[in-house]
Image (cartoon, rainbow, N blue to C red; front, side, top):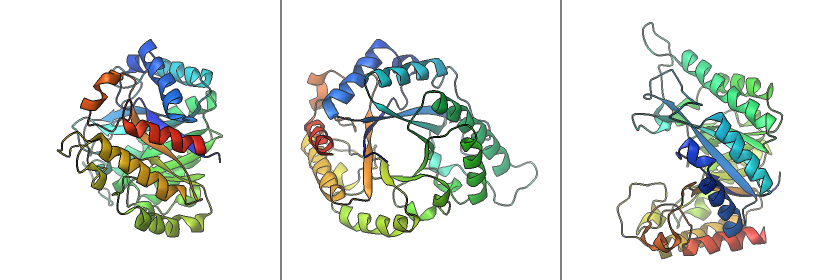
Length: 309
């Protein structure tokens, strides 16, 4: 597998923004200013709450297929490799990691079997698009911690996806959960979200290596990054953390993460979090405390690291 010099693009953006001229300009800037070789297209789906079994996608609240095809084709024109990452969110704001049902099914209660049937339909829909557009990889789930124990359901889903899609398949587990997935043997690439504290990277890399090495499969961080706020380097996964805007702290986090992970040959890349289709003005970067690196010192750290790879 090629080293993934990637960024996540379009998460929670409006469908029309994704394939608009502004969205395309943003994608072009992503490639030029970070030296990325891969774009991870994070297209959303919605269920009402964690215990809902209906999943909605390709509609007015999510990303329309036409806009997705449009931005994939433009990414190809730019010479970017494409990783398709359909992501399920709960409309009530609950994090998808808490989607959960009774292990012993009961009448009149929402069921794993119903949810996985709908989730499989959702993922097969996007596996067909990934095949038609020759995406280099399909990520079949993101940080769905409570679902991961349902081994056979995931294996059946992967079989259904493989009937439609011939590229690489990965699953993006959450930080600290790499040892929670018993079905890594069924995917082609292992991935996780690398939101680890700045002073814990060596420890966590040692732990992850011990978990993934027996599977003899490529590994990469499908998500990783840090907001530009005071304190975020020690809690990079907390997007709600209150703190003063601190571009230096974000820059230092990126330097440390790349220094530590760059020494590990088994780490085969990053899908950094994240780059929006609708960018703020570059002169406003100093006022932005989010994960974005556009116009911030961390942007050059990313460019220089990716240039070396």
